[in-house]
Amino acid sequence: MPYTINQLANLDIVELELTGIISGSNLREATTKCIDLQRKTGVTRFLVSANGSEVIASFVDVYDIAEKQYHREGLSRQSRVAVVVTTALGAKAAADFYETVCQNRGWNAQVHPNRQSALDWLTDAT
Image (cartoon, rainbow, N blue to C red; front, top):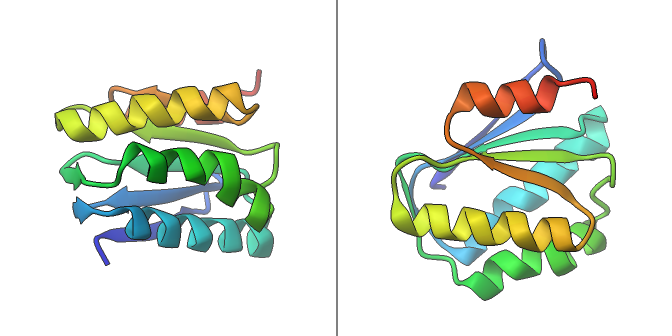
């Protein structure tokens, strides 16, 4: 698995850290696990770190997550997803596309240049 999932219990955030080469099936699998964790714990804030990863998932794979998988698996509309990408061009393009697709479909997602910016956005009460 080129990813790890941890719950930051003190912040009520699930962190998904992508590492290595990330395929569409890796993204779908990690998404399913995060949504399962949401069902078990009620967490609605997700931090996705794509630093140090190479995203080889197609734009169709990324699109299908926000367009189909979130609905099919019951992701809460209350959810916020912060994606941290700073270096890898492929990961940045995929993250920017993901943000656009999510926002066009009513999901609350944003790309951030660093972890602290993402955490600040996730924990902002407004």
